[in-house]
Amino acid sequence: MLELTHGRIGYGPITIVEDLSISVGEGEAVFLIGPNGAGKSTTLRGIVGLNPLTRGTLTWDGRDVTRLPAHQRARLGIAAVPEGRHVFPQLTVVENLEVAARVASHAGVKERIDDAFDLFPRLAQRRGHLAGLLSGGEQQMLAIGRALVQRPRLLIIDELSLGLAPVIYQQVGDTVRELAGSGLSVLLVEQNARLAMRICSRGYLLSNGAIVLEGTVAELEATAEMRDLYLGGLGKVG
Ligand SMILES: Nc1ncnc2c1ncn2[C@@H]1O[C@H](COP(=O)(O)OP(=O)(O)O)[C@@H](O)[C@H]1O
Ligand SMILES: [Mg+2]
Image 1 (cartoon, protein in one colour):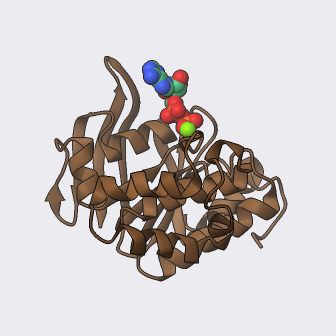
Image 2 (cartoon, protein in one colour):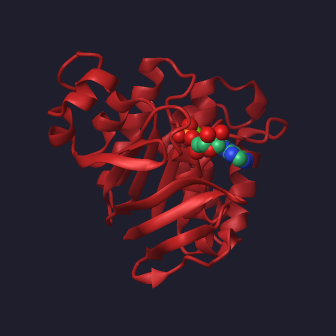
Protein backbone atom coordinates (compact mmCIF):
# COMPACT_ATOMS: atom_id res chain seq x y z
CA MET A 1 0.00 0.00 0.00
CA LEU A 2 1.37 3.38 -1.09
CA GLU A 3 0.11 6.47 0.62
CA LEU A 4 1.08 10.01 -0.27
CA THR A 5 -0.39 12.46 2.21
CA HIS A 6 -0.48 16.26 1.80
CA GLY A 7 2.50 16.06 -0.53
CA ARG A 8 4.22 19.12 -1.89
CA ILE A 9 6.61 18.47 -4.77
CA GLY A 10 8.47 20.78 -7.10
CA TYR A 11 11.83 21.74 -8.49
CA GLY A 12 14.08 23.62 -6.09
CA PRO A 13 12.14 26.67 -4.93
CA ILE A 14 9.32 26.09 -7.47
CA THR A 15 6.27 24.25 -6.14
CA ILE A 16 4.34 22.29 -8.77
CA VAL A 17 1.97 20.08 -6.77
CA GLU A 18 0.60 21.10 -3.40
CA ASP A 19 -1.36 19.25 -0.72
CA LEU A 20 -1.60 16.12 -2.84
CA SER A 21 -3.01 12.96 -1.26
CA ILE A 22 -3.29 9.72 -3.22
CA SER A 23 -3.11 6.03 -2.37
CA VAL A 24 -2.65 2.75 -4.20
CA GLY A 25 -3.69 -0.45 -2.46
CA GLU A 26 -2.26 -3.94 -2.78
CA GLY A 27 -3.05 -5.34 -6.24
CA GLU A 28 -5.00 -2.25 -7.14
CA ALA A 29 -4.76 -0.39 -10.46
CA VAL A 30 -5.20 3.34 -9.93
CA PHE A 31 -4.92 6.17 -12.44
CA LEU A 32 -3.61 9.70 -12.14
CA ILE A 33 -4.92 11.60 -15.13
CA GLY A 34 -4.80 15.22 -16.12
CA PRO A 35 -3.87 17.57 -18.92
CA ASN A 36 -0.35 18.29 -20.09
CA GLY A 37 1.54 20.29 -17.44
CA ALA A 38 -0.82 19.35 -14.58
CA GLY A 39 2.05 17.92 -12.53
CA LYS A 40 1.59 14.17 -13.13
CA SER A 41 5.24 13.41 -13.90
CA THR A 42 6.34 15.64 -11.04
CA THR A 43 4.13 13.59 -8.70
CA LEU A 44 5.71 10.40 -10.03
CA ARG A 45 9.17 11.88 -9.39
CA GLY A 46 8.15 12.60 -5.81
CA ILE A 47 6.95 9.02 -5.32
CA VAL A 48 10.04 7.33 -6.73
CA GLY A 49 12.37 9.75 -4.95
CA LEU A 50 13.81 11.81 -7.82
CA ASN A 51 12.32 15.01 -6.41
CA PRO A 52 12.03 15.51 -2.65
CA LEU A 53 8.76 16.03 -0.85
CA THR A 54 9.08 19.48 0.71
CA ARG A 55 5.94 18.88 2.73
CA GLY A 56 3.79 15.85 3.52
CA THR A 57 4.62 12.17 3.89
CA LEU A 58 4.97 9.10 1.74
CA THR A 59 4.47 5.69 3.27
CA TRP A 60 4.94 2.30 1.66
CA ASP A 61 3.54 -0.70 3.50
CA GLY A 62 3.17 1.48 6.54
CA ARG A 63 6.81 2.48 6.51
CA ASP A 64 7.73 6.15 6.18
CA VAL A 65 9.87 6.42 3.01
CA THR A 66 9.58 10.21 2.63
CA ARG A 67 13.32 10.73 3.06
CA LEU A 68 14.59 7.54 1.43
CA PRO A 69 16.72 7.98 -1.70
CA ALA A 70 15.39 6.65 -5.01
CA HIS A 71 17.53 3.50 -5.13
CA GLN A 72 16.28 2.41 -1.71
CA ARG A 73 12.66 2.90 -2.72
CA ALA A 74 13.40 0.78 -5.81
CA ARG A 75 14.79 -1.94 -3.55
CA LEU A 76 11.58 -1.87 -1.56
CA GLY A 77 9.65 -2.69 -4.73
CA ILE A 78 8.65 0.63 -6.28
CA ALA A 79 9.44 0.67 -10.02
CA ALA A 80 8.60 3.27 -12.63
CA VAL A 81 8.47 3.35 -16.41
CA PRO A 82 9.51 6.86 -17.38
CA GLU A 83 7.71 9.05 -19.86
CA GLY A 84 9.32 8.44 -23.26
CA ARG A 85 10.40 4.86 -22.41
CA HIS A 86 14.20 5.57 -22.25
CA VAL A 87 15.38 2.13 -23.30
CA PHE A 88 19.06 1.82 -24.23
CA PRO A 89 18.88 2.16 -28.03
CA GLN A 90 22.29 0.61 -28.71
CA LEU A 91 21.61 -2.49 -26.62
CA THR A 92 19.49 -5.42 -27.75
CA VAL A 93 16.16 -6.25 -26.17
CA VAL A 94 17.61 -9.01 -24.01
CA GLU A 95 20.58 -6.82 -23.00
CA ASN A 96 18.21 -4.07 -21.90
CA LEU A 97 16.37 -6.57 -19.73
CA GLU A 98 19.60 -8.02 -18.32
CA VAL A 99 20.91 -4.62 -17.27
CA ALA A 100 17.63 -3.80 -15.53
CA ALA A 101 17.36 -7.24 -13.89
CA ARG A 102 20.89 -7.03 -12.46
CA VAL A 103 20.18 -3.68 -10.84
CA ALA A 104 17.73 -5.50 -8.59
CA SER A 105 19.74 -8.67 -7.98
CA HIS A 106 22.20 -11.01 -9.66
CA ALA A 107 20.15 -14.07 -8.77
CA GLY A 108 17.45 -15.45 -11.03
CA VAL A 109 18.13 -13.02 -13.88
CA LYS A 110 17.20 -15.54 -16.59
CA GLU A 111 13.94 -16.51 -14.90
CA ARG A 112 12.87 -12.92 -14.53
CA ILE A 113 13.67 -12.19 -18.19
CA ASP A 114 11.80 -15.32 -19.28
CA ASP A 115 8.77 -14.09 -17.33
CA ALA A 116 8.93 -10.78 -19.19
CA PHE A 117 9.11 -12.68 -22.48
CA ASP A 118 6.09 -14.77 -21.47
CA LEU A 119 4.17 -11.60 -20.78
CA PHE A 120 5.24 -9.92 -24.02
CA PRO A 121 5.90 -12.66 -26.64
CA ARG A 122 6.65 -9.92 -29.15
CA LEU A 123 9.76 -9.04 -27.13
CA ALA A 124 10.90 -12.66 -27.20
CA GLN A 125 10.67 -12.62 -30.99
CA ARG A 126 12.77 -9.45 -31.03
CA ARG A 127 15.22 -10.46 -28.31
CA GLY A 128 18.34 -9.94 -30.44
CA HIS A 129 17.19 -6.68 -32.05
CA LEU A 130 18.59 -3.30 -31.08
CA ALA A 131 16.09 -1.51 -28.86
CA GLY A 132 16.51 1.71 -30.85
CA LEU A 133 15.11 -0.02 -33.93
CA LEU A 134 11.94 -1.32 -32.25
CA SER A 135 8.50 0.18 -32.91
CA GLY A 136 7.06 2.54 -30.30
CA GLY A 137 4.79 -0.19 -28.96
CA GLU A 138 7.64 -2.66 -28.68
CA GLN A 139 9.75 -0.05 -26.88
CA GLN A 140 6.91 0.49 -24.41
CA MET A 141 6.71 -3.29 -23.83
CA LEU A 142 10.48 -3.30 -23.28
CA ALA A 143 10.31 -0.34 -20.90
CA ILE A 144 7.62 -2.13 -18.87
CA GLY A 145 9.65 -5.34 -19.07
CA ARG A 146 12.68 -3.50 -17.68
CA ALA A 147 10.61 -2.45 -14.68
CA LEU A 148 9.08 -5.90 -14.19
CA VAL A 149 12.37 -7.82 -14.18
CA GLN A 150 13.10 -5.95 -10.95
CA ARG A 151 10.12 -7.82 -9.48
CA PRO A 152 8.40 -4.71 -8.15
CA ARG A 153 5.24 -4.71 -6.07
CA LEU A 154 4.22 -1.29 -7.39
CA LEU A 155 4.55 -0.47 -11.07
CA ILE A 156 4.15 3.19 -12.06
CA ILE A 157 3.81 3.90 -15.78
CA ASP A 158 4.13 7.45 -17.09
CA GLU A 159 2.15 7.99 -20.30
CA LEU A 160 1.75 4.42 -21.50
CA SER A 161 -0.20 5.55 -24.57
CA LEU A 162 1.98 8.46 -25.65
CA GLY A 163 2.69 8.33 -29.39
CA LEU A 164 1.17 4.86 -29.84
CA ALA A 165 -1.73 3.80 -32.05
CA PRO A 166 -4.91 2.87 -30.11
CA VAL A 167 -4.75 -0.80 -31.10
CA ILE A 168 -1.22 -0.97 -29.65
CA TYR A 169 -1.78 0.89 -26.38
CA GLN A 170 -4.98 -1.03 -25.73
CA GLN A 171 -3.08 -4.28 -26.14
CA VAL A 172 -0.27 -3.17 -23.81
CA GLY A 173 -2.89 -1.76 -21.43
CA ASP A 174 -4.71 -5.09 -21.29
CA THR A 175 -1.48 -6.78 -20.26
CA VAL A 176 -1.00 -4.20 -17.52
CA ARG A 177 -4.53 -4.84 -16.31
CA GLU A 178 -3.79 -8.58 -16.12
CA LEU A 179 -0.70 -7.80 -14.05
CA ALA A 180 -2.79 -5.84 -11.60
CA GLY A 181 -5.25 -8.73 -11.50
CA SER A 182 -2.42 -11.01 -10.47
CA GLY A 183 -1.53 -8.93 -7.41
CA LEU A 184 0.82 -6.20 -8.64
CA SER A 185 -0.13 -2.66 -7.64
CA VAL A 186 -0.25 -0.27 -10.59
CA LEU A 187 -0.30 3.52 -10.76
CA LEU A 188 -1.07 4.65 -14.28
CA VAL A 189 -0.08 8.23 -15.02
CA GLU A 190 -1.92 9.15 -18.20
CA GLN A 191 -3.25 11.92 -20.35
CA ASN A 192 -5.55 9.43 -22.05
CA ALA A 193 -8.52 9.19 -19.68
CA ARG A 194 -10.32 6.55 -21.70
CA LEU A 195 -7.34 4.22 -21.56
CA ALA A 196 -6.83 4.89 -17.86
CA MET A 197 -10.46 4.06 -17.13
CA ARG A 198 -10.26 0.90 -19.18
CA ILE A 199 -7.30 -0.41 -17.19
CA CYS A 200 -7.97 0.87 -13.67
CA SER A 201 -10.86 0.67 -11.25
CA ARG A 202 -10.48 4.11 -9.70
CA GLY A 203 -8.30 7.17 -9.79
CA TYR A 204 -7.61 10.85 -9.53
CA LEU A 205 -7.89 13.84 -11.84
CA LEU A 206 -5.03 16.29 -11.41
CA SER A 207 -5.25 19.86 -12.63
CA ASN A 208 -2.80 22.66 -11.93
CA GLY A 209 -0.98 20.66 -9.29
CA ALA A 210 -4.05 19.68 -7.27
CA ILE A 211 -6.51 16.78 -7.21
CA VAL A 212 -9.81 18.14 -8.47
CA LEU A 213 -11.75 14.87 -8.69
CA GLU A 214 -11.36 11.35 -7.40
CA GLY A 215 -13.43 8.20 -7.39
CA THR A 216 -14.24 4.96 -9.12
CA VAL A 217 -14.50 4.80 -12.89
CA ALA A 218 -18.30 4.80 -12.62
CA GLU A 219 -18.30 7.81 -10.31
CA LEU A 220 -15.95 9.80 -12.50
CA GLU A 221 -17.76 8.90 -15.70
CA ALA A 222 -20.88 10.41 -14.22
CA THR A 223 -19.27 13.81 -13.68
CA ALA A 224 -19.67 16.64 -16.15
CA GLU A 225 -15.93 17.44 -15.87
CA MET A 226 -14.93 14.03 -17.17
CA ARG A 227 -17.56 13.96 -19.89
CA ASP A 228 -16.77 17.40 -21.20
CA LEU A 229 -13.04 17.54 -20.77
CA TYR A 230 -11.88 14.02 -21.27
CA LEU A 231 -14.40 11.79 -22.90
CA GLY A 232 -15.48 14.21 -25.57
CA GLY A 233 -19.11 13.21 -25.11
CA LEU A 234 -18.28 9.71 -26.29
CA GLY A 235 -20.15 8.08 -23.44
CA LYS A 236 -19.23 4.83 -21.72
CA VAL A 237 -15.68 3.63 -21.73
CA GLY A 238 -15.51 0.43 -23.73
N1 LIG B 1 12.93 20.46 -14.27
C1 LIG B 1 11.91 21.33 -14.09
N2 LIG B 1 12.12 22.53 -13.51
C2 LIG B 1 11.11 23.42 -13.33
N3 LIG B 1 9.83 23.18 -13.70
C3 LIG B 1 9.57 22.00 -14.29
C4 LIG B 1 10.58 21.02 -14.52
N4 LIG B 1 9.99 19.95 -15.12
C5 LIG B 1 8.69 20.26 -15.26
N5 LIG B 1 8.44 21.49 -14.76
C6 LIG B 1 7.14 22.16 -14.72
O1 LIG B 1 6.26 21.45 -13.89
C7 LIG B 1 4.93 21.57 -14.37
C8 LIG B 1 4.28 20.20 -14.40
O2 LIG B 1 5.02 19.37 -15.29
P1 LIG B 1 4.80 17.82 -15.33
O3 LIG B 1 4.83 17.26 -13.96
O4 LIG B 1 5.77 17.28 -16.31
O5 LIG B 1 3.30 17.72 -15.90
P2 LIG B 1 2.55 16.51 -16.61
O6 LIG B 1 3.36 15.28 -16.44
O7 LIG B 1 1.23 16.45 -15.96
O8 LIG B 1 2.43 16.90 -18.06
C9 LIG B 1 5.02 22.23 -15.75
O9 LIG B 1 4.62 23.57 -15.61
C10 LIG B 1 6.48 22.15 -16.08
O10 LIG B 1 6.89 23.24 -16.85
MG1 LIG C 1 4.20 14.01 -17.79
